[in-house]
Image 1 (cartoon, rainbow over the protein chains, first blue to last red):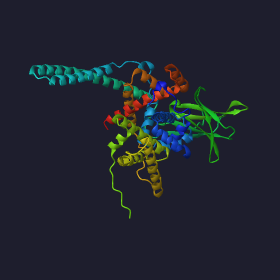
Image 2: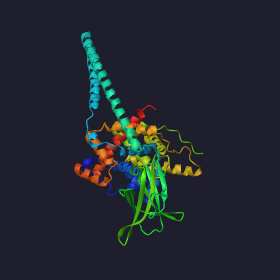
Image 3: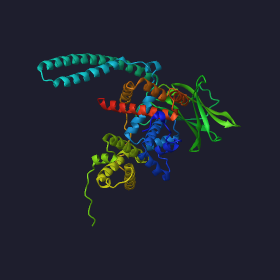
Image 4: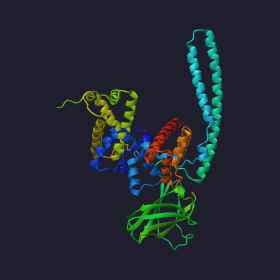
Length: 300
Length: 188
């Protein structure tokens, strides 16, 4: 395994590996790639790293629709991989302030001391047990008793501190959950809504409503009158017009004669409130707003 | 009438010896090969990649006493040949009828998600300060300028972006294993 600090890229381009993981490798390249995977440990580790990035992109809602379907059909086929997705979602939602992340953990030091005391006790016992005289054995036993007592005190102290820390964490967790739902299980839930352009509509009336209870992603399918651009971008704005999220490189798809552009937005970006979604395209070489859509996110 | 083949039980010890004379290295190689076989099968669209990978390994283990003395080259390539056969047979068999016991994602409870988060919190504190800081900065979804932030991290740590990616992956992998152990140790 190579040293990360002296790393030379195993591949210049990640695309063939991502394609492989999503089952898109052409048949003629498949054997070669599979054999390299099995025989080159550095390559294998690099594939593992890209696999984790793919999982990260999935949980962040950054995969295209096609990639997401492939990911769910071809990739999420083992319990371990599903656990990795849950792990990735949980890791991405850990919010640790820098100060807290860098603080020291005194109870860990206590735990280390307890472990040291334990191992010292064991070592002492082993050393003295080999001695022949009863006097020496008695001294050893006394020492062990002392160490065991010290160890019990330390472990008790450690447990108390751990319980306190867990209580605090539990309170913090509940507070965090109240403001943003934690996602951590199963196939990622997603809420889908089809929106129609309404640039002239009063956002206060007749706005389509959506409830995101437990969803990680909201997919907005924005209907278009005509498909005029190869690529679109879309931005999500709150009621004051502040941009909260933007995605580019979006493409249209046709569903039962409707031309749609799909925009996936992480649910945590859109707490309950009124939003406008602006669809952008290129006109005369300039980025131009094509349509505007309104949606109301309801309380979970 | 052809004589039926005698049953040969899989010999995993011989298999490990074949992979390496060093038992620790052999174990490490074995686990890597198994993981890669699962990847290969999943990439080929197999819905039960772990089962088929184990089937391939069992076949290799059964054949090791016969082939190892004369085999030339990397044993991993032999695994590849076997897994291709196992997959081909599986695909042929599937055409005859639907496969039973294909896995489906089990429904998860909030409790499971909570346990996952608790374990993650516990495991994060087992990392060194530098590692914890790196992993949280690297994977935090709070940051909208993730790409720029990772480039800055790579500059600060040296070695380039790919080295950083690998470094983050290695820490993340340790963290994942810690969380897995923690979840296994939790009372059901």
